[in-house]
Amino acid sequence: MQRRSPGLFILLCVALCAALPARAQEEFTLRYRLEKGKSYRFIDSINVKSSQEMMGQEIKATSSVRAATGVLATELGADGSAVLTVTPEAMSISIHSAQMDTTITPKEMIGKRSRVTVSPLGTTSRREVIDTVKFTGLTRQLAQRELVRFHVFPEAPVKVGGAWKSVRPDTNASMGSNIVTIATIEYSVLGKEKKNGKEALKISYKGKLTVAGKGSMMGSDFFIEGSGSTSGTMYLDPASGLVLSEDSTLDMESTIALTGQQKMTIPSSQSVTTHHVLAAD
Image 1 (tube, rainbow, N blue to C red):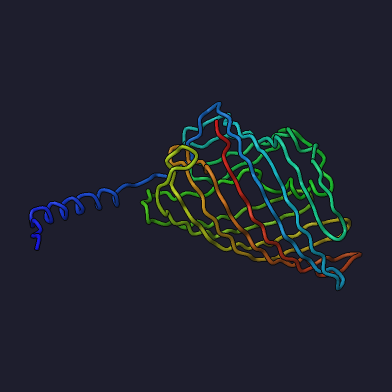
Image 2: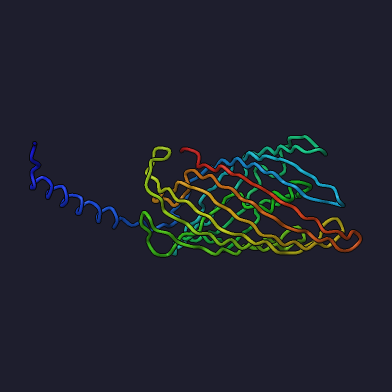
């Protein structure tokens, strides 16, 4: 019978004890660190399944959006905030339903710039329109969406295995409406992985959303309320704070109540999947 060396066993234990704390103590201070004058390009693929009921009839539709968005960091504040010029560079929208089957390119949106100011932690403090454009039809709804999404980071450093929570209210006031969305998201750092040639943090998240607001549409006032859930996984570059790749899902149930000349209640549901990537330099 072969005898095992107790010295070798002790050395192995010492090595493991030395290595494990060193790994556990590795911390990451997550911040957006964009370079002034540098341009970034994001590619999004969004698929939506929706259903709504109007006057006893159920209307189902599937749609997809393919978009490329450019972001230029024009100014950096003393506090680390970044002023960004956001420009839709390309977009196509396909819609399939019993009422229509079409693909459109919203040319009026392409090249129209807006400006956002983002803190190092990812909160948006200001939004401005640089190039005005008249939106109609479907592009009116698209104009109310954020073209670039920023996750909210924790103030304290995080480790692999660590977690944080963000509560993010967002108000969209445009086109005669005032819609407030509150997202409560829990993040978990799963580990480190190579992604697109970079060392990245793999982070999962899940959370709840609520929507409430009012506005006017086609001569009628409307009120909307709803709730939903979201989840996703992203690969984050800790050096810049930018997401290299992200896959997410969102499920939302809402009700729209119309008053005025047309009075009706419209329940609706949406299921959205999104693939988001940072294009290579």
